[in-house]
Length: 302
Image (cartoon, rainbow, N blue to C red; front, side, top):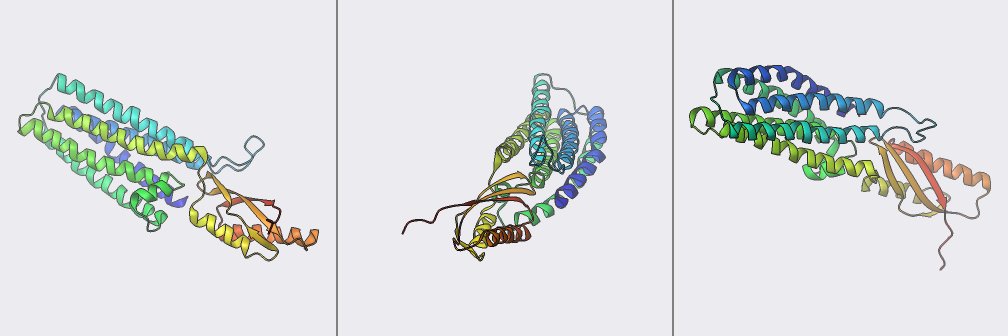
């Protein structure tokens, strides 16, 4: 999960660099949309810390209480991140936007506001480039949406979604400021804040849906399933093997349940050697496979 950590650290550095300046600019200009962007950065910073916590806890090995390890920790904390984006980010932004539309006020000191937006765009853009490169390496030529759906480490696409939303949010905030200050649209700044909130809610829904599926226990990718089956079928002493049942107990922790029919002429010692060799080959080809359970089945009648 090295790629995940690089993306998260880059996002954390970018968000910490711009959070305080956003709030200072919001106070100086009186902009509600800029305040929403400050809240957005606070949420993103706390989310990065939660993701790092999940990545760290997921590395804990098996114990008496958790015999399969704690790889699912990363999925749980990513789900917490989704709820944080929805509640703290989306909810507060929409609330502040509604208040501003109900009681609009004059926007001042736009120099501060535009300067912070430009600086934020540079920082967020840099973070997005880093996270996008990491995501590119993990999705292996798949489309963006398909890569998100098939990813087993949500932290690889969480940062991409957050940074993309942040860049769009900055554009919305700039549009709201411009509309309120130069076009005489008193509702524009509050409307931009509401739009930012809705954007964050959309990101939270996508992230929550994908993480919830992982938390329930997703199967490994089809390539791994097919590869394990082929390795078993090509193993001397194995007559045939069914497609394995797999489950992710974490991004780098896959359990394999494999049904095989063995050569009945094998002695007990040869059978043990055959099964051990099969497990070793599977783990050598796929290091993410943590355990292989073999089930011996009766030969099918002719």
